[in-house]
Image 1 (tube, rainbow, N blue to C red):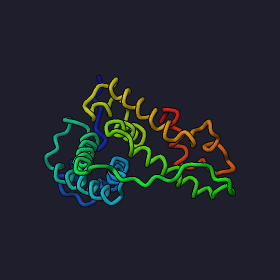
Image 2: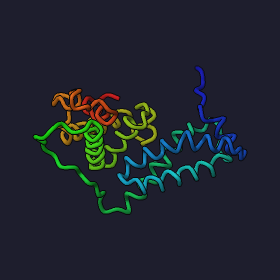
Image 3: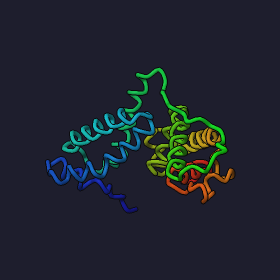
Length: 210
């Protein structure tokens, strides 16, 4: 049986050796993913930046001690990022989110960019209201695009438990986003310009696909 090679292995080795180009490449490759993870887990851009930077600092410190084959580096880094997020969430009494008002506007069809932005904000707000473990499962599988096996290992649960969290999370999101679901026509109506990434993300979450 062939051994899966960690695509980050050589890069981590070079970072551990102090190669400036490798450090820049590591930041370019991993920082956006850590920002995405933290922003969706925390719902706060400033906190997300702090978490992402701390995760990258820990990656830089860990690189000289990294043992090839012990784990995928990306999986380890996601675990670091999630732990940092949960540290911050534990210090909060609640997650404050600004939810855009629901309802149908009888005026002219809004600008496509504005409508897509509103849809994205609605999805983010609904995501922030999910129980933490459901949100983590959705973020890892839908936004970070990890496979079920890797996401389950990262969360230290079975694949079946992960699929249960995903199912419950999607069901809650479908309820919260019912008015922008595909069957409502909003996500498909070309006249309203809703085929942007935010609308497509809402549609995939609604359908339970990636």
